[in-house]
Image (cartoon, rainbow, N blue to C red; front, top):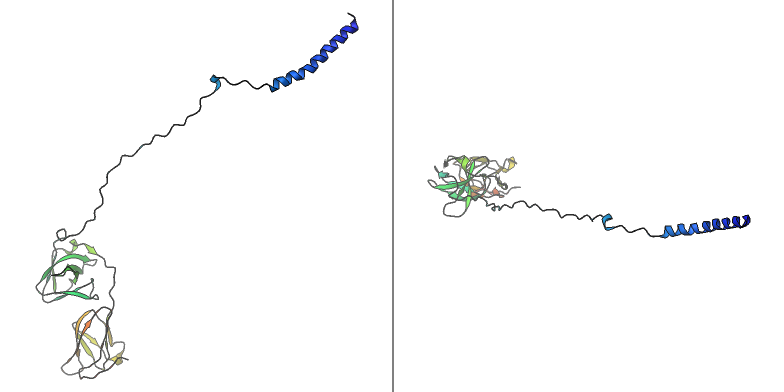
Length: 235
């Protein structure tokens, strides 16, 4: 074989290798990667359900309110002495009377006001209750008032007034109150507790009785006649 033929053969082989190399590279790139074996696959993480810890249950008894009964209350008795006593609908003289406790009678005290000046009592021969002042010579308490349950009122009494329309001075009993003539306004009008009163004309000799009046909460009563029989109206 001549030298020129050897050279030509060598060049041909070189060119063949050059053309075949990209095809081999492309084949290598397009070949899919090998699949992992079973040993290469990590087992999936399984989230465990949380364990529930239940607090031990306790059986609770229902709350039963404590009700004061006649047997549960302290033994406190109100005795009426020296005269009769009004029983009022609230712990103040400005409340209307709702009953009467007569002299030498007794009743059960069931509560007291915050100042311990009044006690709530049961009205004899009824299912009603009311309030009686113990700051008087007509009431006498047996037992300790501090042992009674305390009561705070949320209602206020309505004011009542007595007005003198005459030209004479009037005297009101009980209470020993003087109501001045109408021309001495505003002293001809007084604020007065509910109750029964007798009015006397003290500008006439003998202080004759003029009128009996019944005062209730919110009332506005006028004295229209004097001790001589004269009549006048308030301006």
